[in-house]
Amino acid sequence: MNAVTNSRTPVALTIAGSDSGGGAGIQTDLRTFAFHCVHGTSAITCITAQNTLGVTRVDAIPTEAVVAQIQAVVEDIGIQAAKTGMLLNQEIILAVAQQVKAWKIANLVVDPVMVSRTGAQLIDDDAVQTLCHALIPLATIVTPNRYEAQIMSGLSINSLDDMRAAAQIIHQKLGAKAVLVKGGGMQGNLRGVDIWFDGQKLETLTTKLVETKNTHGTGCTLSAAIAANLAQKKDLLTAVQQAKDYVTTALTYALDIGKGQGPVGHFFPLLRN
Image (cartoon, rainbow, N blue to C red):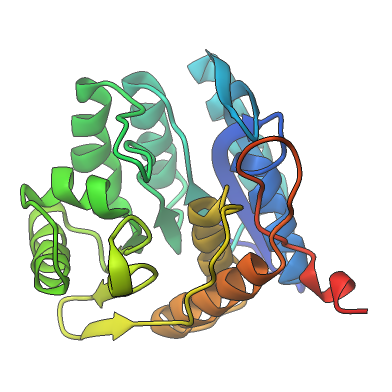
């Protein structure tokens, strides 16, 4: 079985949770796909009740329903790329990994949503281990933040050299084709500096720093933009660099909504007029 079709329109799939506040998760992924002129499809893994102030409830979707959503998309429409976000528990992670293998899903971007940018663990230890050893080895690229990279590499990350070492360890230890260690959770001039490693090239990727409190959904947006670029047949490093540029501009037009941390502005071209 193969998930790819010859459709003239690029198609990407997001396998992630729903954010009722619209700032992250599938809502953000689908907006990002649309901006890139990629048709967005989805498999919802969990329903969250959240807003700009935080999450008040999380309900898992039955594993069978997650699988059925993936199958419905790839059997009929087909996809050129996919990304994963919040998978929530061990059962869902295993089911998604099985679907990736069964359908030979290529161009898989794994955003390992296990620890928040502030360091709070979001899934239990069993789910973390399953994500690391069942799904990440299937990834075209994995995009951990500072704290996720610490778990995945076993290193304490406090400097640029630590980020570089972590990227290389994660690549060797977990088997993803490429690793992007994100610096959004770092301090000082390392904020927004990411490290790329694909087994050969070790690159430091930088963009301008945007000062805003409204950064909700940046990780989802980045991984979705990478997937959209891959669906358009761009090479992996180009896909990452252009995704970073997209996030940076979206941060410039971040939305000051709600009483807490607002989302990035995915539709910023409309705001320029």
